[in-house]
Image (cartoon, rainbow, N blue to C red; front, side, top):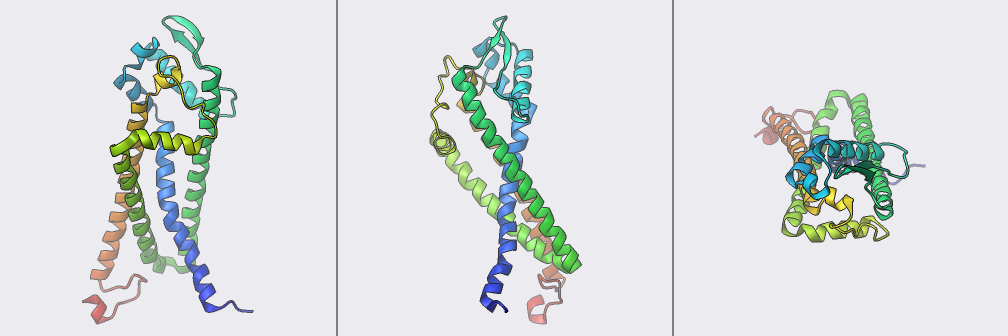
Length: 250
């Protein structure tokens, strides 16, 4: 029994639509994954906001603290336990409330890893199947999808970026309210090391860091795809790779 033509047409549109949506998901979660594992981002923030003076932890020990936190995110270790020297005295720096919050953050980070991995697999699988079935005739269609995905990514990043620039405090608070089911993220910057290490200004910088890298990738993808489609048009080819009529070529 054949499905009605409209239903077949609808089903055929789902995989490419998912491909387009997967592009911003992959670029953004990939940039977030990079950020959480970038020593330079941590160390730059420590220097910029004079964290050594605020916490009483030397720059060398701060580097080790950052490495311990990155290791925690990428392991099955529970609970988080970071010991370092504070004004020369070795101690555990995170209170129970901070440890619980970091457990919640770790779950969120690993969720980001999963989304990045799943979208990467889908993008590669869709591309591989497309070339296996249609060979070179698939290239123009792929370029169109990449152009749409890059454009969607650019729009989303610019929208969130403008909102962050105008009111990052509100965005930061809403993110925590949506992402966490408890209030353990409400910490005291005077006594809680987690906030002293990573003040809100650090997270603004990190957000811009992620946005910039995802945006550059989106612009490269969109520009390359758009240039390729324009090349085909000038060469007198349809987006399907077939020769265009004289009217279309004109």
